[in-house]
Length: 116
Image 1 (tube, helix red, strand yellow):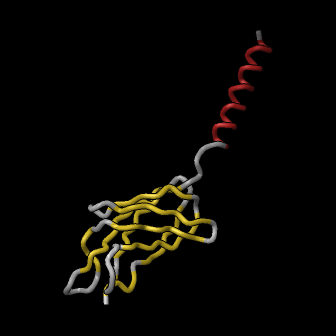
Image 2 (image 1 turned 120 degrees about the vertical axis):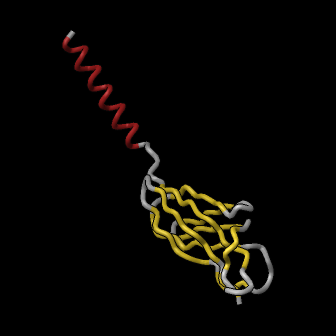
Image 3 (image 1 turned 180 degrees about the vertical axis):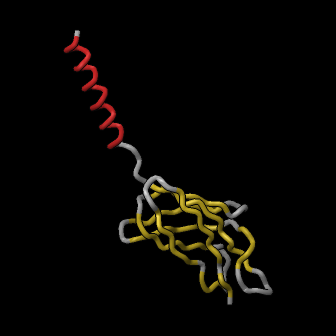
C-alpha cells in the first residue's frame, strides 16, 4: 500500500510539472485607438475603428479596433512597436508608439494619431 501511495504522489508531481511547462507565457495588450483627429488640437482624441499592428523582430501581429476604439492582443513577451491606421487618406503624420509585454501580465496602452 505504501508503494502505491508513493507512486500516485510521483504521478501527481509529474502532471503538475507538465501542466506548468505548457502554460501560456504570453502577455496581453489591451488598448484604445484614438484615430480620428480633433480639428483644434490636431491630435486624435476620438476613439475610432481602425487597424492596429504590433511588431518586433520576432513577429508581426494584427488586430482591429472597433468603433469604440478598443483592441487587444495576446503575444509573446518583449518590446513592440505599435501602429494604428484609421483608414483615412491624408493628414495623418503619426499613429505609433511602443509597449513592453511581460509574461502573464496585462499591459494597457493608448494609440493616438497626430495630424498635420
